[in-house]
Amino acid sequence: MAGPKDLDPSSSPRALLGAELRHARERRGLSQEQLGQRLFVSGSFIGQLEAGTRRMQPEFARMLDEVLETDGFFARNCGAAAKSKYEPPFEEVVEAEAQATAIRQYTSLLIPGLLQTPAYARAVDRPWAPMASEEAIEEWVEGRMERARLLDHPTKPVLWTVLDEAALHRKIGGPAVMAEALRHVAGMAHRNRIIMQVLPFNVGAHAAMQGSLKLMEFADAPPLVYCEGVRSGRMEDDPATVAQLRFVYDLLVASALSQEKSLALIEALAQDYAHEEEP
Image (cartoon, one colour):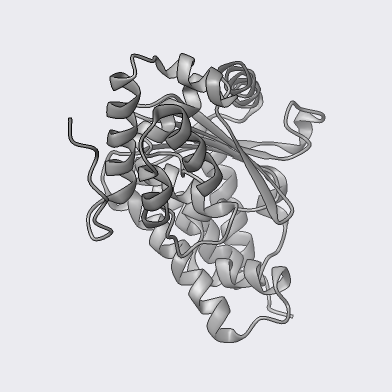
């Protein structure tokens, strides 16, 4: 039987690499769980690689070649599937959200990237990288706006956002920037493009006080959850961990304001910012 062909980088390398992984695994008579056990990862992780929603790292590619006896195919070709304009660890979540059928997220201090305006994104990035050039800042802003274009589709992915009220009051970029940013979020809600709720201050302590999270579902792969910290982030595919964090998200939804009250609050704050004088 002929071996797998090297990938053409001009095609869809991650999808092709995932398909070759599935064929090689099935040729060896292994389930996703069985292959995962041999490589000390979960079966869900193997499923994500096969679906192209997870990035294959060079060290893991070499392990696959050894276990599946693929004569160095994955090590040779994983480089084509790993190219990204985004820096680690964010490149993997950006690629995953582009393939997701549903995204559920909670953010504590910022409007999430998919809903930011250019002016808001610019105001966020400058403190994060105070020594960066204006060209670098603009490149990052454009990258975020490019990510947000996945919402140009009228119905997918489903985006359900729970915003902490703190994100609405943290004056990023000044009153005019905040007014525009909140009106943009409200506009997306008015167009029924997103489901949006606010977690109010009067809730007090809640289940996600230590960070932000993003749950992603896919048509042909197991779900993922992404947890983000300061200049860091991690992707989780373990089913038990994903289920636990989905429960955390459900608790936040249960404590949040209704969509109608959330929209009214955001629009009222946008109006306040619009009438506030710039310093």
